[in-house]
Length: 298
Ligand code: GUN
Image (cartoon, rainbow, N blue to C red; front, side, top):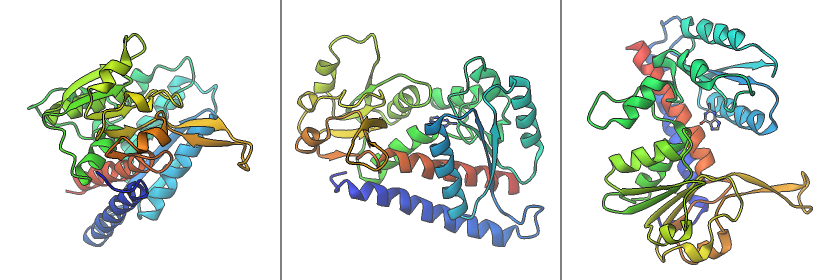
């Protein structure tokens, strides 16, 4: 993965082009289908979190660029959980919707588990339904319909840069259901030796010093010190943090969790923020949506 950081953005663009080719093939093969062979993704956002709105806009734009139909639903923050589940059930029944994404986090008072488990298994393009997630956890069983997008993007980046996790020591920083836990599972399935650090871990730096691969999903700028990194380490920075920057028109800039300048001179490869994992997350959502559409047409 010793490519210049700019290449990572190109990786996501390559995946998006591959998706566009698959979409075009579906449209020509299933032109007589009720939705003309067009894969469809429904994106649901509840409330007005600015970061979620930005992510959702990017996801929908990427869909449209790849020829996937995107259907957006914006519910007010004070919506009832029942109204959200009613919407999900309607989307479950629609033949032109092959994937359903409910942007997280949901407003306080809503129960993620109940909401995510209401999504039809086959349309769960986030892979967050408990059955899909359980299948992800268990090796050698039926695979999940979809693997969560950010973790899948992390593995795809490693694969496309020729980093084989087998036998390597991987340290994951963060244990969230969205990133840390599924990344740990995927790396274990790829035969890495995995350590997961979290808010109660002591001596995080000492554990990171042992790592051949570091995946940080903490959400704190500068959390991963360059001096923790072993020479030649591969660093995947999942953090997206806004820091004040008066020189920028919007007054802030985005940085990852890792001390970028210092890490650059130690790591054999490192993903930039922005432009590394974020675009891969979106690219994997497109892949999961086209996978779901292909299953439904077959
Ligand atoms: N919020 C942060 N990451 C994600 C994601 O991958 N999917 C959804 N639905 N919400 C998120």
